[in-house]
Length: 270
Ligand code: 13P
Image (cartoon, rainbow, N blue to C red; front, side, top):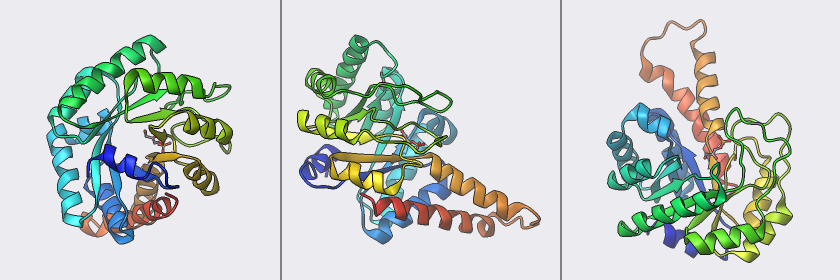
Protein backbone atom coordinates (compact mmCIF):
# COMPACT_ATOMS: atom_id res chain seq x y z
CA UNK A 1 0.00 0.00 0.00
CA UNK A 2 1.25 3.49 -0.81
CA UNK A 3 2.09 5.58 2.25
CA UNK A 4 -0.56 8.16 1.31
CA UNK A 5 -3.20 5.39 1.31
CA UNK A 6 -1.92 4.13 4.64
CA UNK A 7 -2.33 7.62 6.12
CA UNK A 8 -5.87 7.76 4.74
CA UNK A 9 -6.66 4.31 6.16
CA UNK A 10 -5.80 5.47 9.69
CA UNK A 11 -7.22 8.98 9.35
CA UNK A 12 -10.12 8.38 11.72
CA UNK A 13 -8.40 5.92 14.03
CA UNK A 14 -6.33 6.76 17.12
CA UNK A 15 -3.24 5.33 15.41
CA UNK A 16 0.03 6.58 14.00
CA UNK A 17 3.03 5.17 12.14
CA UNK A 18 6.46 5.24 13.73
CA UNK A 19 9.25 6.76 11.63
CA UNK A 20 12.79 5.87 12.66
CA UNK A 21 16.03 7.11 11.14
CA UNK A 22 18.66 4.53 10.27
CA UNK A 23 22.39 5.15 10.04
CA UNK A 24 24.00 1.83 9.19
CA UNK A 25 23.22 -1.88 8.88
CA UNK A 26 23.07 -2.33 12.64
CA UNK A 27 20.46 0.34 13.40
CA UNK A 28 18.43 -0.79 10.38
CA UNK A 29 18.52 -4.38 11.61
CA UNK A 30 17.41 -3.35 15.12
CA UNK A 31 14.47 -1.36 13.74
CA UNK A 32 13.42 -4.19 11.42
CA UNK A 33 13.60 -6.79 14.18
CA UNK A 34 11.39 -4.62 16.40
CA UNK A 35 8.78 -3.97 13.70
CA UNK A 36 8.77 -7.59 12.61
CA UNK A 37 8.41 -8.84 16.17
CA UNK A 38 5.46 -6.52 16.88
CA UNK A 39 4.01 -6.87 13.35
CA UNK A 40 3.83 -3.10 12.97
CA UNK A 41 4.49 -0.91 9.92
CA UNK A 42 7.51 1.38 9.95
CA UNK A 43 8.73 4.40 7.99
CA UNK A 44 12.51 4.24 7.45
CA UNK A 45 13.95 7.74 7.31
CA UNK A 46 17.14 9.04 5.75
CA UNK A 47 18.55 12.52 6.20
CA UNK A 48 21.04 14.19 3.88
CA UNK A 49 23.87 13.21 6.30
CA UNK A 50 22.86 9.55 6.28
CA UNK A 51 22.55 9.61 2.49
CA UNK A 52 26.05 11.12 2.28
CA UNK A 53 27.37 8.49 4.69
CA UNK A 54 25.83 5.38 3.09
CA UNK A 55 25.38 6.53 -0.51
CA UNK A 56 21.96 7.29 -1.98
CA UNK A 57 21.25 4.14 -4.02
CA UNK A 58 22.95 1.95 -1.44
CA UNK A 59 20.87 3.35 1.44
CA UNK A 60 17.61 2.94 -0.48
CA UNK A 61 18.36 -0.62 -1.49
CA UNK A 62 19.46 -1.48 2.06
CA UNK A 63 16.13 -0.17 3.38
CA UNK A 64 14.01 -1.83 0.72
CA UNK A 65 15.69 -5.19 0.95
CA UNK A 66 15.49 -5.14 4.76
CA UNK A 67 11.72 -4.49 4.58
CA UNK A 68 11.38 -7.48 2.26
CA UNK A 69 13.69 -9.73 4.25
CA UNK A 70 11.91 -9.05 7.55
CA UNK A 71 8.40 -9.03 6.01
CA UNK A 72 7.67 -5.55 7.39
CA UNK A 73 5.21 -3.16 5.77
CA UNK A 74 7.25 -0.01 5.38
CA UNK A 75 8.37 2.92 3.29
CA UNK A 76 11.63 4.79 2.59
CA UNK A 77 11.30 8.48 3.42
CA UNK A 78 13.56 11.51 2.99
CA UNK A 79 13.74 13.35 6.33
CA UNK A 80 14.22 17.16 6.20
CA UNK A 81 14.99 17.50 2.51
CA UNK A 82 16.62 20.92 2.33
CA UNK A 83 16.40 21.53 -1.43
CA UNK A 84 14.24 20.69 -4.41
CA UNK A 85 17.35 19.14 -6.04
CA UNK A 86 17.81 16.65 -3.19
CA UNK A 87 14.12 15.76 -3.29
CA UNK A 88 14.39 15.14 -7.06
CA UNK A 89 17.39 12.83 -6.58
CA UNK A 90 15.56 10.87 -3.88
CA UNK A 91 12.45 10.48 -6.03
CA UNK A 92 14.65 9.16 -8.86
CA UNK A 93 16.38 6.78 -6.45
CA UNK A 94 13.05 5.17 -5.52
CA UNK A 95 11.97 6.80 -2.25
CA UNK A 96 8.32 6.19 -1.32
CA UNK A 97 7.97 9.53 0.43
CA UNK A 98 9.87 12.81 0.66
CA UNK A 99 9.91 15.68 3.09
CA UNK A 100 10.64 19.13 1.82
CA UNK A 101 11.55 21.30 4.79
CA UNK A 102 11.02 24.95 3.95
CA UNK A 103 10.14 25.85 7.52
CA UNK A 104 12.96 28.37 7.84
CA UNK A 105 12.04 30.17 4.61
CA UNK A 106 9.52 33.00 4.38
CA UNK A 107 6.02 31.44 4.28
CA UNK A 108 5.35 32.34 0.63
CA UNK A 109 8.59 30.66 -0.45
CA UNK A 110 7.85 27.58 1.68
CA UNK A 111 4.46 27.29 -0.03
CA UNK A 112 5.90 27.86 -3.50
CA UNK A 113 8.72 25.30 -3.19
CA UNK A 114 6.48 22.76 -1.44
CA UNK A 115 4.01 23.05 -4.34
CA UNK A 116 6.87 22.42 -6.77
CA UNK A 117 7.81 19.28 -4.83
CA UNK A 118 4.18 18.08 -4.72
CA UNK A 119 3.98 18.44 -8.51
CA UNK A 120 7.24 16.57 -8.98
CA UNK A 121 6.28 13.78 -6.58
CA UNK A 122 2.87 13.32 -8.24
CA UNK A 123 4.61 12.06 -11.39
CA UNK A 124 6.04 9.16 -9.36
CA UNK A 125 2.90 8.87 -7.27
CA UNK A 126 4.74 9.27 -3.96
CA UNK A 127 3.93 10.97 -0.70
CA UNK A 128 5.04 14.48 0.33
CA UNK A 129 5.58 15.86 3.84
CA UNK A 130 6.24 19.54 4.56
CA UNK A 131 6.94 21.56 7.70
CA UNK A 132 5.12 24.63 8.92
CA UNK A 133 6.30 26.50 11.99
CA UNK A 134 9.50 26.35 13.98
CA UNK A 135 10.63 22.99 15.36
CA UNK A 136 14.15 23.65 16.67
CA UNK A 137 16.85 21.67 14.90
CA UNK A 138 19.92 20.32 16.73
CA UNK A 139 21.75 23.23 18.35
CA UNK A 140 18.87 25.71 17.92
CA UNK A 141 17.06 27.14 20.92
CA UNK A 142 13.44 26.12 21.37
CA UNK A 143 12.67 28.80 23.98
CA UNK A 144 9.75 31.13 23.29
CA UNK A 145 8.82 29.61 19.96
CA UNK A 146 5.40 30.11 18.44
CA UNK A 147 3.21 27.14 17.69
CA UNK A 148 1.59 26.44 14.32
CA UNK A 149 -2.01 27.68 14.24
CA UNK A 150 -5.00 25.82 12.82
CA UNK A 151 -5.65 28.60 10.36
CA UNK A 152 -2.07 28.55 9.04
CA UNK A 153 -2.09 24.75 8.74
CA UNK A 154 -5.42 24.78 6.89
CA UNK A 155 -4.25 27.41 4.40
CA UNK A 156 -0.88 25.69 3.89
CA UNK A 157 -2.56 22.30 3.30
CA UNK A 158 -5.03 23.77 0.81
CA UNK A 159 -2.40 25.72 -1.08
CA UNK A 160 0.21 22.98 -1.31
CA UNK A 161 -1.86 19.75 -1.33
CA UNK A 162 0.75 17.94 0.76
CA UNK A 163 -0.09 14.52 2.23
CA UNK A 164 1.58 15.12 5.59
CA UNK A 165 2.56 18.15 7.64
CA UNK A 166 5.05 18.55 10.48
CA UNK A 167 3.62 21.04 12.96
CA UNK A 168 5.22 23.00 15.79
CA UNK A 169 3.37 22.15 19.02
CA UNK A 170 6.21 22.20 21.54
CA UNK A 171 8.70 19.57 20.40
CA UNK A 172 12.32 20.08 19.29
CA UNK A 173 14.96 17.84 17.71
CA UNK A 174 17.60 16.27 19.94
CA UNK A 175 17.48 15.85 23.70
CA UNK A 176 15.44 18.28 25.81
CA UNK A 177 16.93 20.39 28.60
CA UNK A 178 13.62 20.23 30.42
CA UNK A 179 10.57 18.07 29.87
CA UNK A 180 8.68 19.25 26.78
CA UNK A 181 5.06 20.33 27.19
CA UNK A 182 3.01 19.53 24.11
CA UNK A 183 0.32 21.98 23.08
CA UNK A 184 -2.40 19.36 22.80
CA UNK A 185 -5.20 21.92 22.53
CA UNK A 186 -3.51 23.34 19.45
CA UNK A 187 -3.02 19.85 18.03
CA UNK A 188 -6.76 19.13 18.39
CA UNK A 189 -7.58 22.44 16.67
CA UNK A 190 -5.22 21.69 13.76
CA UNK A 191 -6.67 18.18 13.44
CA UNK A 192 -10.20 19.58 13.29
CA UNK A 193 -9.22 22.13 10.63
CA UNK A 194 -7.29 19.81 8.27
CA UNK A 195 -7.51 16.33 6.77
CA UNK A 196 -3.81 15.69 6.14
CA UNK A 197 -1.51 13.45 8.19
CA UNK A 198 -0.04 15.46 11.08
CA UNK A 199 3.56 14.67 11.99
CA UNK A 200 5.28 14.95 15.37
CA UNK A 201 9.00 15.65 14.91
CA UNK A 202 11.42 15.54 17.83
CA UNK A 203 9.96 12.36 19.34
CA UNK A 204 13.09 11.56 21.40
CA UNK A 205 12.58 12.35 25.07
CA UNK A 206 8.88 13.17 24.86
CA UNK A 207 7.20 11.39 27.79
CA UNK A 208 5.31 8.31 26.63
CA UNK A 209 2.01 9.52 28.08
CA UNK A 210 2.26 12.75 26.08
CA UNK A 211 3.01 10.81 22.89
CA UNK A 212 -0.03 8.58 23.48
CA UNK A 213 -2.27 11.61 23.97
CA UNK A 214 -0.89 13.22 20.82
CA UNK A 215 -1.67 10.05 18.86
CA UNK A 216 -5.20 9.98 20.29
CA UNK A 217 -5.65 13.60 19.24
CA UNK A 218 -4.54 13.10 15.65
CA UNK A 219 -0.79 12.65 15.17
CA UNK A 220 -0.29 10.13 12.32
CA UNK A 221 3.51 9.94 12.15
CA UNK A 222 5.91 9.93 15.08
CA UNK A 223 9.58 10.68 14.31
CA UNK A 224 12.35 9.27 16.49
CA UNK A 225 16.07 9.64 15.76
CA UNK A 226 18.28 10.95 18.59
CA UNK A 227 17.35 8.21 21.07
CA UNK A 228 18.35 5.58 18.50
CA UNK A 229 21.81 7.06 17.94
CA UNK A 230 22.24 7.56 21.65
CA UNK A 231 21.18 4.03 22.63
CA UNK A 232 23.47 2.48 20.03
CA UNK A 233 26.55 4.56 20.80
CA UNK A 234 26.24 4.54 24.59
CA UNK A 235 25.88 0.76 24.61
CA UNK A 236 28.91 0.40 22.36
CA UNK A 237 30.98 2.79 24.48
CA UNK A 238 30.24 0.76 27.60
CA UNK A 239 30.96 -2.52 25.85
CA UNK A 240 34.26 -1.35 24.42
CA UNK A 241 35.82 0.04 27.56
CA UNK A 242 38.29 -2.56 28.87
CA UNK A 243 37.35 -4.95 26.09
CA UNK A 244 39.87 -6.38 23.62
CA UNK A 245 37.33 -8.10 21.38
CA UNK A 246 37.93 -7.27 17.71
CA UNK A 247 35.21 -9.41 16.19
CA UNK A 248 32.64 -6.78 15.39
CA UNK A 249 30.00 -9.47 14.92
CA UNK A 250 30.30 -10.14 18.64
CA UNK A 251 30.51 -6.49 19.69
CA UNK A 252 27.54 -5.05 17.79
CA UNK A 253 24.70 -7.46 18.75
CA UNK A 254 24.17 -6.14 22.32
CA UNK A 255 23.90 -2.59 20.92
CA UNK A 256 21.46 -3.83 18.27
CA UNK A 257 19.41 -5.45 21.04
CA UNK A 258 19.23 -2.19 23.05
CA UNK A 259 18.03 -0.27 19.97
CA UNK A 260 15.54 -3.02 19.17
CA UNK A 261 14.03 -2.74 22.66
CA UNK A 262 13.91 1.05 22.40
CA UNK A 263 12.07 0.87 19.07
CA UNK A 264 9.67 -1.75 20.41
CA UNK A 265 8.79 0.66 23.23
CA UNK A 266 8.07 3.44 20.69
CA UNK A 267 6.06 1.10 18.46
CA UNK A 268 3.79 0.32 21.40
CA UNK A 269 2.83 4.00 21.62
CA UNK A 270 1.46 4.32 18.08
P1 13P B 1 14.61 13.42 17.46
O1 13P B 1 16.00 13.28 16.95
O2 13P B 1 14.47 14.47 18.48
O3 13P B 1 14.02 12.11 17.86
O4 13P B 1 13.73 13.93 16.21
C1 13P B 1 13.60 13.11 15.10
C2 13P B 1 12.98 13.81 13.98
O5 13P B 1 12.03 14.55 14.13
C3 13P B 1 13.52 13.57 12.64
O6 13P B 1 12.98 14.42 11.70
